[in-house]
Image 1 (tube, rainbow, N blue to C red):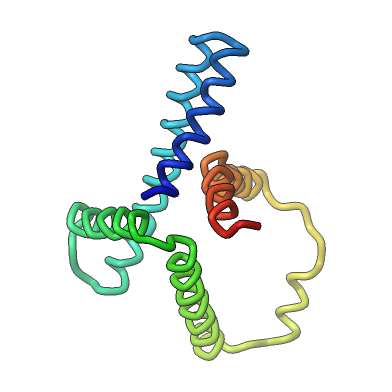
Image 2: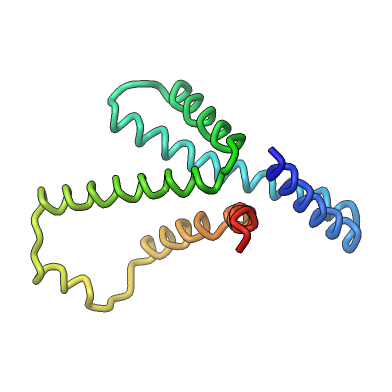
Amino acid sequence: MMEIEQMQKGVGHRRSLVRNKYGPIFGISGGIFAFATSIGYETGNILGTILALQAIFGFGSIPVWGTIVVALAILLLVLPELYDRLESLILILIAVMLIGFAGTLAIVGFSPAKTTTGLTPSFPSLESLFLAVAMMSIYFSLYGGLYQNYLVREKDY
């Protein structure tokens, strides 16, 4: 809990810097937009997790899975040694992804000749370009950067 309190103090300090330099309107609107960005980002993450769990287990509604996922996320945040637990969880998820990749490769088959055709440079269609920009905007969000900053501070790098 102490780490969360320290993180909130750091965010509060940045907020007061903006308010002092640009005025209360910018401070308040910046806080509202940061909050809205965080909600949008996390909603996408939670919905993606819910859809994956429904596909894996084949049952459950969005509200039920959503409650479970959010409760687990909150539990993960209030546990001591957050970074160590997240690190272990991410390693497990990477192992599951590798197993899934290997399984998909075994089912579909592998053709080196067809693989090399993907290395030929080409300009994507406009629709693909918009999709790539949308995906990049999710991954380069300010919220993710702030959270990474918090995790790095906890690890004392």
